[in-house]
Length: 216
Image (cartoon, rainbow, N blue to C red; front, side):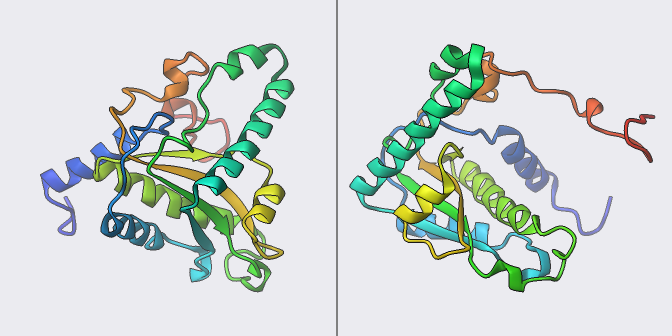
């Protein structure tokens, strides 16, 4: 084992946070103490980013009326998604897809404007700005789980409409509405598995060696 490895207990805690992280939709109200929220956002800010561009921006939604308007945008997209799903429309409408009104905190995670100025690592893969933001969100998610808080990533919204609502400049783009806060309990498995919407696939189906589709 590497001399740089964490202790057994520390490693177990890291893998536990990864294994028990859930995309939460059910929240218990309450609040997140300011110092805890600051700690979670600091964890997000420590994420890796291509060319150290740090493209993430977080908007804390503290106004209740603004929450309601964001939820209305989510509901509009929920209806459109149901229509696009065709035969699975009714099944989809039974799913709980967000906890915006129930959670303690709502954060909107967005990509900054003027990202085109950052070329390092993005000349052939410009989407690496999005990958960097996703890493920040995952940091926040895992830190929240370690702190006993639930978090849900809501992506059902029109980015242009949400950007206008939040006064984002041209070139900036909202990527996630994050619901954060205390929960009664964590799902024992991903909610979509519990609701029989989808089944997880094993890693063996997604791991190739040397060439696409080749397995050992």
